[in-house]
Length: 166
Image (tube, rainbow, N blue to C red; front, side):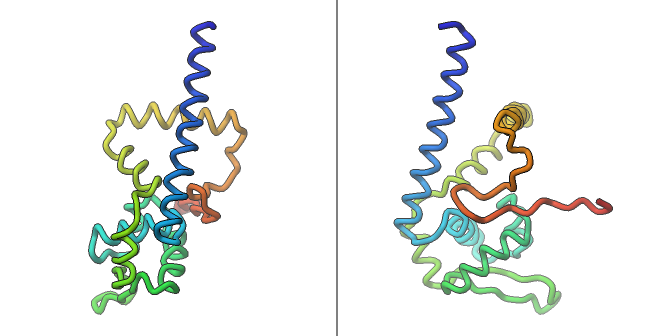
C-alpha cells in the first residue's frame, strides 16, 4: 500500500466514523426526546441562555433566521417554548422554554450539530481554514455544490444568507 493509498483509506474511514457518530447521536436524541436533532439543538441552546432573542439564537446556531423560526414554530406547537414580544421594540421576539421544554432538555443527550459547532468554535483560524478547505474539496468530489444545506439527518434546509444588492 502506498502512502497515498493509506491516506485515502484513513480519510474514508474517518468519514465513516463521522456518519456513524452523527447517526448515533441523532437516533439517541430522537429516542430520548421525540424531537429531531435541530429541534433538540434549539431547545438546548435556549436552555443555556434562559431567554434569548430569535436573532441571537439564529447567530449562535449558525442558521438563517427563517430556518430557526421554522424550528421554533414546531417547538411552539409542542408547547416546549414560549415567545415573548419585546415591549420596547415589537420587532424583537424572545424565546424561552416552558416547563415541558425544560423536562425534555433534562432527559436528552448531546446533539451532533451542537458538538460540531462547539468544536469548531474552539479551533484556531488556521485549523478552521484547513477544515473548510477540506470540506470544500469533499463537496466538489461529490459534485454537491448545488445541493441545499439540510441540517444533519433532517429535512430542514438552512436558507442561504442573502447579501444586500444580490
